[in-house]
Image (cartoon, rainbow, N blue to C red; front, side, top):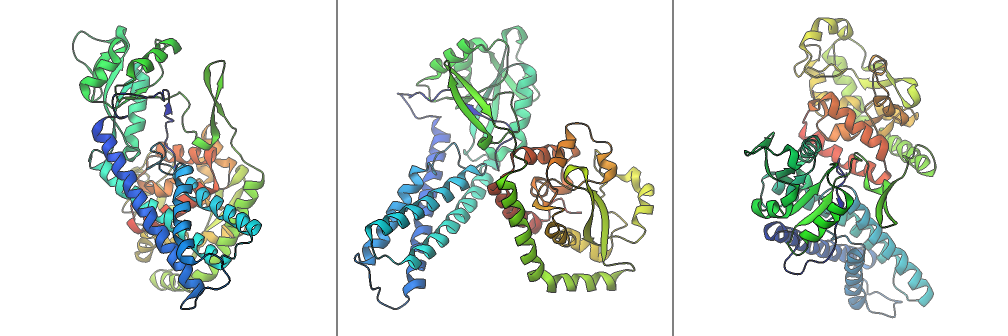
Length: 494
């Protein structure tokens, strides 16, 4: 998925005299890109071999004017060139967000379409089965390999192993603190704040700090401050003193220094696909498209939701039967628990879950209210005495939520979306939080893959609103994939 704070390049001019950015970070980035290139080559080689063996086996290929000993290496080379042409090795998209995955899929699908059209026009007798299998296996393999490489990158960034850019934040005090908080909230994005520059009027005669971030200078000496602390990126946030002319001059001053200049606008929590930069009268105006709450993509999302939920219910029916039997044998009460939740447009519906608590759980809630371990409008306890023995196991692996597939099939929920709220929570929503109701609630979502019950109320709402504003089919697939990891790790499940 994309970062919470948009970082827009403010200067892309050439820098004669050194790499961009500094040597340690840049060397790590080059090493990571080489790893991706090797991984992609290995995946595509295996995919093409699988396509050949699956199509021909031990048979000798016939009907092709070009021998496959030439076709296979040519396909591999053209595929790699297609990935390069689609900027799948661009350091601006690697390691964070869904754009990397979209580019990999687009490069593969466009190449497949181009080869199909070229083969038809030139009447070249290359097996369509060989191509279809190779592209199917290769595209999936590329996505899995990129995911594995990204996880390795995130672990390296968490260890501080030279894989993160060292950032000097420039702006007013309040905006500097806000940007620092945002970047530290998601350290795997690869931005490590090492210092700050604030307006001259706020600079004290003695060294000072903003939280634990050292103030290393004012707006008069930003390039010198970046060099002094070894920063390879200057991130400019809002400030009345940073006029357009002054910002342009800063870009000129950083030329040739190996330091990147990025701008963090006041616009936050908007994903890249909704943002387009348009130069107007010399100004890089940011055009923000409105969120999409209806239309063809919504119809496709609904079709995919219902199709997958139907298939999942059929495949998982033996497991559902075993869980139902275990609940029945473990404690008195019904197998299923039906609770009123609020869906799209404020419409209430009954969400289905396997019962994980004793039958009088709601009556006991008032006695436990003082032991609530979360903030906001929800009630959560790590060791809730109302949860049954089987219920603890079901909650640990999120198996209690499998009956919600029926809600998805009925069109009341989506596979991916905001957490379905209770009517009592919705009654206390303000105008901003109520935007969660513009889309269907989901069985999983950003809240599920980001910590579940370990999240604060504020962070949970922020993630839900981010999804509402920036949902996409590609992001849904990414969240579904990450859900498996979150369930296996059981983090925040109680």
